[in-house]
Image 1: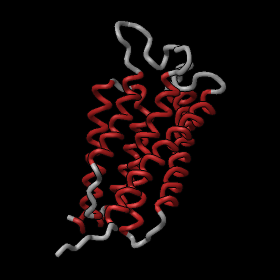
Image 2 (image 1 turned 90 degrees about the vertical axis):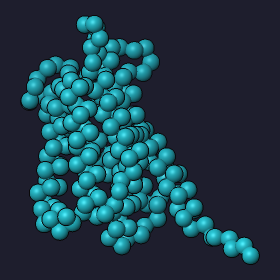
Image 3 (image 1 turned 90 degrees about the horizontal axis):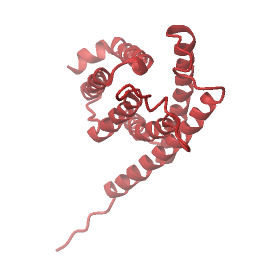
Length: 209
């Protein structure tokens, strides 16, 4: 199984990247009962690939957090009884778009930190956990910036609906600000949990007579 996966690894990775990109692009336009099963299938495919190729089991709790982030986004596009969606509703202090751009990176940061750490260790590279966390956070912020470009493409070229993805002149900068806050919270949370695990793994065993 491992040899087969390794042989077709470039195609598998390319397929996963394309699948993820198309899914992200179409997510705001999909019904929640379509997007969530697709997300489950995508995460299961990644889990299976990582296990078959590297013999590494991704924690299901981390995958559940990623699924929850997709659920939050899909929930924001629902319309109840003809009313405005949560994304379209204007709240007094904190908009739903700001909530998701803060919460989603916080939920997904732990799995990125875990994957980067596990990948480095698999290839024999051991870096301080703080440095791994920093690299994961900068990678996530880069992805967040690219996502804002995807929003622009979607809003301007693909399915032009004024205000569908970009809400005003400060929307992109405000989204990135919330992304930075969320991924910082998630990264620190992942660091604290993994740091505790590392300490427990290296805790000396007491031998009693």
